[in-house]
Image: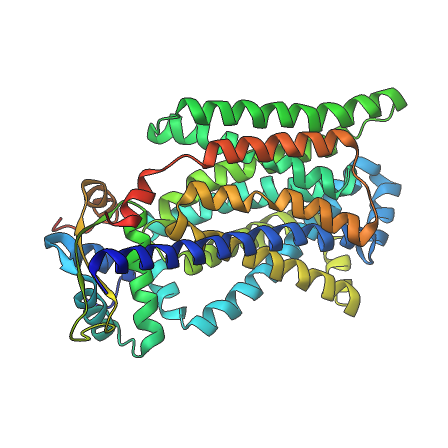
Length: 96
Length: 348
């Protein structure tokens, strides 16, 4: 049921197996029909919020050489933490 | 540029923005006490106070007027936040979030019970009975309640450093409350209910924070805060104000009279400062950590005292200044601790 639940729920789902921030952002933009740079940054901020809340952890970093997200900036790979799994389960995300 | 330098640059950028948001929060929160204090002497609230005081006594009149003022505060806050969400294009997300009753909206509505009828009403009562500076500084005690609750509830550990901070804040609180009380006991005229209001503000915001955190960490804060104020509006306008009207207080008569330019202007000013202090508060947390965000945000006590001095020329009594300084010292001790969140933010 993509696009029907709050964005952060979907981000938690997507990060279950570990995912790069640009992959998450572009998938969310597609599923929720959110276009443009403003929504892109706002979704990325959601990811940062989840990470700072301890639900996601930053597992890998690389420089965006080709400009898949923002050329010259850092790309982060995130994974769901144990706490993130508990919170996702509270939100009835069943496959976690 | 190499990876390490880029990481450092990204971290510095985040921290810079985080402190900026937290600082805005402190300024806005401090400013809120200006309309909050002013509104008491404006009509229709002044007239309403007179009418109810004549029939039911001063104490009752103050509480009932405070209810109406708090209800209007909630109304203008939700207006400000609705505009904000509209600008950000977040109505879709709001619809998605409100439907998630179990994980999200339940917590927001529960938080609004403690935030509204307890903390904000208590603040207005303290402003009306004792004064703006007292109301602002008394609420500085909220982190004590918040951290004790978090410890009991989610088993969060309180470090020695945090205990030291709590001790400072409690000493500050005793100075603020005790100082005012002693002076008033001497004059034989104690505004007990105002002091109760100060305690309600501190306890209410502490409890609200602990509860709201549960829903906010998996929702969009802009949306979550709007829903929390939606809850508060329901409590005031659908439950409490009508009940008071049925009991026989002239709630709606004066509510309709609030639509005069000056009163509306002051109320809108209250809504904007209060609404955006919440928004900026939550924006700072992911960037600098909850601890630092709250620590900087707590400077609102200082700003409130400064603004009240600039606008009304009120010099607070030395007990409020000393107590406020102790509370600020305590929150810096408590919040300058390195948190786990900071680690994950740095990405090292």
